[in-house]
Amino acid sequence: GYVGGIAGYSSAYNTITDCYNRGALTPVLYAQSSYNANYSTNNTYIAGILGYMASTTSYTFANCYNTANIPATCTTSGNGTNNYYSDALFYNSSAFAATNSYHLNSCCANNAHFSISKTQTELRDLQMIHSLNVGTPGSGIWKQDRMPYQNSGYPLFVDGFYDIGIETKRATDVTAISAQLNGYIDTTVHDLSTISQVGFQYKLEGSASYITVPTTSDANPLLLLTQLTPCTTYTYRLYVYSGGNYLYGDTLNFQTLCQATDTINAITCYGDPFIIDGQTYTTPGTYYQIIHDTTFVINYNNYPSRMLILDTTLIYGNSLLINGVYYSQTGTYTIVFDTDLHGCDSTILLNLTVIPDLQSTVTSQNVSCHGGRTGVIIVTPSEGAPPYKIEIFNALDT
View 1 (spheres, rainbow, N blue to C red):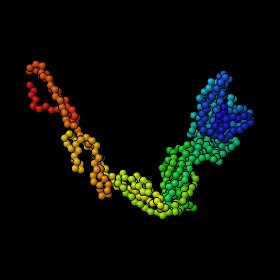
View 2 (view 1 turned 45 degrees about the vertical axis):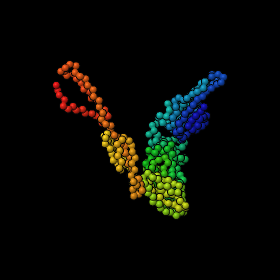
View 3 (view 1 turned 180 degrees about the vertical axis):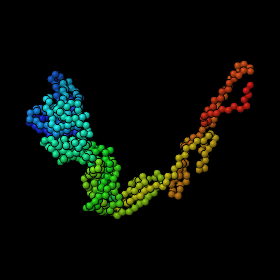
View 4 (view 1 turned 90 degrees about the horizontal axis):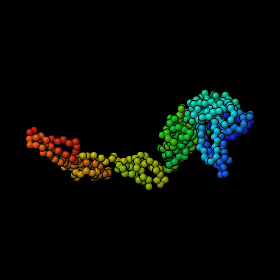
């Protein structure tokens, strides 16, 4: 088999120039004979640009680079013989030399055709563009990949077509005065950690200048536009900013609905949702909802929480009086007071720990001989609240 980043097999009188490969190659070899293993042989050639160069006669190989990983070994199976051959740029048994070609220093173990090893920094550097552009043919067609990267910082073609890696998506949840803008950033193209800013730009259709609104750096950026004008067309696009450069997604339009608008101010007790026309809101904020051909601005809030969590410890025999009730046993209690002027409950969550009554056992051992000092009294405390302190009163030292 023949596997290459650009081509698998090529014979004489050919030219490969001004190309690159960045896609990793992972071969799996299989050789199997149902008759005899000696009759099954698999020869596989794999390289960064051209898998196998069958002949070097009148061949030109120049101005190329490879960053893809070319493994030194590969997975083999079957009862036959698997022969594996690999190289940084192309495989050929001769010492045919590539001209002005390069490879990432970590990409492969074999380099038999004079490809020049470069570090990632060197391949991304402006000097690499000068090196590739001095070659013949194809001089002047290479350019540097600048942030935000389209080719992970490696050289690309001046007139090449590249997926810019960002997409302006259709606006959703459009009302008379609001719309949610949506975008997508392909993280296989862009490293989010290298992007300084992500956002959207929008304007009235036909206007000369955009309004720029940054948003969260995320693979799926969102922005809720508000205070828009009903029955109006807006133009918008996603952008990313990195390394002093802007990259823009496609320009799209949306039209706000031609509807009347109104406002609803709603306040509920803490923890209670607000429900209107089948829609439930649980987090305070500003929302936009269409009800019977009218766009409503819903300003939803909660009254302050009247929940108190009380963690208390009592010594056995004592009690705690709350709202006319005594509590003297270990446990968790939910105590609800009368509603306040807003009709909201006031609640105490009581976590009560009662320390048990102190207990003790006393054992003694008499002296072994009258008048001696070998008598022993052992006091063993339990329950209560350690550590314990034992005091002896009116003891005679006789």
